[in-house]
Structure formats: C-alpha cells, structure tokens
Image (cartoon, rainbow, N blue to C red; front, side):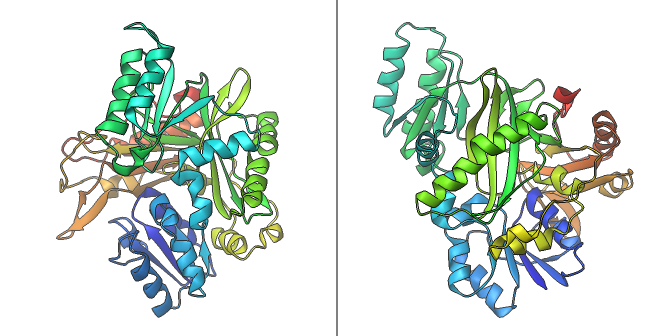
Length: 428
C-alpha cells in the first residue's frame, strides 16, 4: 500500500514514522513534510492547503490512503475532494470539521447535546463584546475571570485567558478590532474561565464505533509554571494520572458519545480523530474545545506507545468498519514530548538557523526526535518554524521518560533554541 500524509509538522512526522512501520505499507509520501520526514519518507513539494494539487498527486500515484494531519485542509474540504475522486481518506468532511473550524458552532452543538462546557456569549463585533464586559465588570481594575476566543482557526493562538477587565477589553481589541488572527476574529466568544487541570482525550471514530486513546496532557502556555502567552503546545505526556479509569469512562459517556450522536443528528457525521480538550473542574470534566485531528504535540507521545498497526486502524475508520479493530495494544510505559522552539515564539522569530546535535540526541535510549518546523538547506537541518522539534521519550516511569527526553534536549543546539523545563511535572 502507498500512503500520503498531508502536513509538515511534528504530528505528521510521527504519523509517517508509525505508518511506515506497518508491514502493509510499501511507501509513505509527506506533503510538504520537513527535514525529519525526508529521512523516513518521500517529501512532496505541495502545500497542505493546495487541495487540487494534493488530489491530483493522490490520483496520479495511486495512493491507497491519505491521512490529513492539520486542521486547515480538513476545514477546506480536502477529504471531500479526495472521496469525490474515488480515493480513500482519513479525516472528517468539511462540514464535520466545522467542529474545530468554528468555536461558535462547537459551543452551540455542545449546548444542544447537553455536554458540560463553560457558560458563554457570542459576539460579531468588538463594540458589542466590549459593552458586555463593561456592563458585567463596571469598575476599572475589576477581576474578570473570562476567556476570549476567536471563532475561526488561529493555529492554537486565538485563545486569550484574562484576569482583569482591562485584559478582556484588550483581548477583544486584538481579536475583533485589530484582527490579529485575521478572519478568525470575525466572530468571537467570551466564556467563563474554568479552574482545574487540563487534559486531552482523543478518539478515533468512523461515525458509529468509537475507540478512545489514552488520556494525555498538553502544555499550552509558553513558559514554566503555565505562564506566558498561549502557544500551539510546548509539550505533552501520556498517560496522565489525573484521568483515572472512572473519569475516563465518564468522559467517554458524557462527552465523546453525545458529540458523535449530535454530529450525526446535525447531518454532519464525523469520522476521523475527535479530540476533546477538557478542564477537570471540581464539578467534573468540562469541554474547553474540540479539535478534529491528532493533537500536536499529543500525537507524538501517543504514537510512541501505540503497538497496534496504525495503518489498519485508519483504513478501518475510513472504510466505516472500525468495529472490526477491537482493543488497541499499548506499551504500558509512559511517554513525554518536549517541544524545542525558536527564539521569539509564539511571536516573530528568525528562520534558517543551523541545528546541531540531532545525531547525538537520537542515540539516547528510548528517544525519538520528531521534526516540526525544520527544513534542509544545502544538506544542513535549519529551523523553519516556531515549534521546531518534539523530543519524545518513553520510560519505565514518567520521571524516567522526562530524564531521557531532557537528556536528548541538552544535546541539540541552535542560536536562540529554548523549551519549557517542566513538561510532565504535574504528573509527579
């Protein structure tokens, strides 16, 4: 079989790596890929959002399965276009991808399906949103425990957690007036800020059967201690002990199953990866958001532990026969992914800085370095994005996996490289 993975980040490197291990897979292509995928698959110089070119490549090269990694091509209808061309694809339709493409759609669906989530209000302009905040918090300096979110896709950065009235007004201005996140800010949500620990539960579904994957915990804020601006994710570990068996069953029963049924009722049947971002509050788990694809960086530690054939699973989901798969096999050891980032991320950063030490890091036992924002420049690996590498390790305990991951991190260098030092500490 021939497989095409669409995307160029750490998630796509992990997918290509794991799919390439299947005895049923002869060749893996990645479009556009990165310096890491170039060593394990064949990179194809096609943008992840160039739907016509991707469909043409899949037809011309008789691709048996296309796995779509990022959210943007899913929202743009890549899976629909592939299926219309008679090609097999793993991922939701454009209609179903609205679950991530529009936070307003997601919140309204959760309300309809009676899935626990934060109270919220939606707004179409900065003026109405600002008036709402000023009415609710009339005094300058008033505490305002709210979260302001851009409705559309913003690469994981269109969510601003606020402490005060002024924070909220500034967030509204950035999203809806200055349009810092572009058209994603044409509509916005203001919701109550939930307190607790975050967790991610991903499930693979064909719209009928749901196979839940072990719970993971992402680290969105840029800096240690969950401080600083939100990012696309600075690291993750799996499994997370805060989601015990009872909690996991509750999330399946009260979140995943109702959402799959609600999507079917909305005539937007969902197949692909259903990713529930959750806050574990003192009143139980509540949904922060849904994504419609593997998380990045959650995908990396998950796939480090997966022992079942990923190709079999994704083909079965694409073909609507996921019930045939049964239980998945997992390495019982925990895993952790530490993201190494470019200087300045999540703001502006310089590209083209040479990365050294990758070979030495790869020699650390039970470590895999997944490339995200990298490219080859005259044979040298250089940084080409904000989140550059996902250094991923598996160990007999979380602390052991953390030690292995950071041992590998210390061997990798480029000017301005940095990472959080506390990934997985919440588990300890």
